[in-house]
Image (cartoon, rainbow, N blue to C red; front, side, top):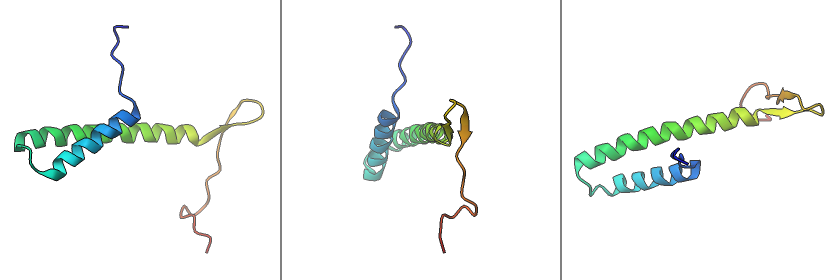
Length: 82
């Protein structure tokens, strides 16, 4: 297995949380803080992409004949029943 494994969604989320905690403490040198910030932004984008992919997957369902069908979305978009 020469191929490097990508971290899981949960591992990336934990890494991002650790970066945020370090930056909130404010006791790291500026250069390191900037590098951590950039890494955090990249992780955030990757996590968002993963979530969007999962959302697309969940937005379809299989019917009785194993055919994909889109879930119906409510009209109006707010979900309020007023």
